[in-house]
Image 1 (cartoon, rainbow, N blue to C red):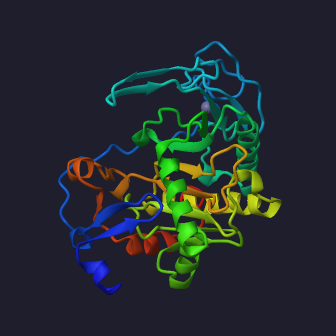
Image 2 (cartoon, protein in one colour):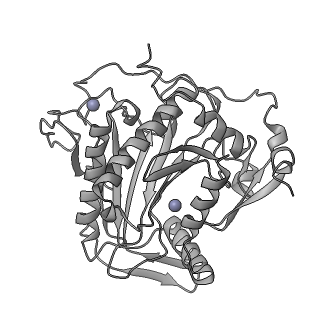
Length: 349
Ligand SMILES: [Zn+2]
Ligand SMILES: [Zn+2]
């Protein structure tokens, strides 16, 4: 198949990181839409909300009171899915019923004391403080011998199930390596053994040559719509240098990570002139003593919006039973994002 045919004919694309396929139907991108239209999310203009459990000085549901913090603020989730004091145990019956105890820790990271901000509307310096917090938490949580994985993520917007607009993310650390990370570790290891080079380093080189899926790049980071993107405007953020975790980020790289996060989230918001919902998160190597020379630090952005602020993509039917499918070609999505202005629509007024 030629690259041209990839833009017009149905085909499937392979994701070498997860070793899964996605069905691409570029000819369907213009089909009429009669499905669900999501309400436009109301945008908050309150710098401080007395009813928000994340704002400085406010009381949380568990009774704890937030300090009058001025930059970032981290605390243990009051309703944590994982607990560090979980007793070890296993339940097993034949090969069919299997359960294991799972210990861990769930942290909440407030990005800013300002209730009305988002990453896209924070300064590079302010986002840099968030990056430093992620690095510090990775070091602290990953240094615990009972922890094997530190998962940093952000759920943004009510559409993604995030009910509080206060800018914040989460960090879950647990004693086993979660499946998604385990798949990517295995794929990168087998690629490394076969080619004597790293999967994402080779992929990044290819994308920098072709340029058609590039969204934004600075000296230390590159954002692309990956060749195998499942979500309409999914992006992959890759560090140019092959480093395996947040802990290896140098000063300049931390600055550039903050800068590209800002540029990328501004373009997302500008696409449909809305505070773009998404789930984003970093993949870094499993923690512990073993080296992972093949592992390459990166972040995934999975935004659900399809064609406007109110029409989202559903992962149902064929996607739940067979494999994911997309209509708009990743190359077209990348071009749309790339060509958007780098000034936030709310600040351009
Ligand atoms: Zn708040
Ligand atoms: Zn990943």
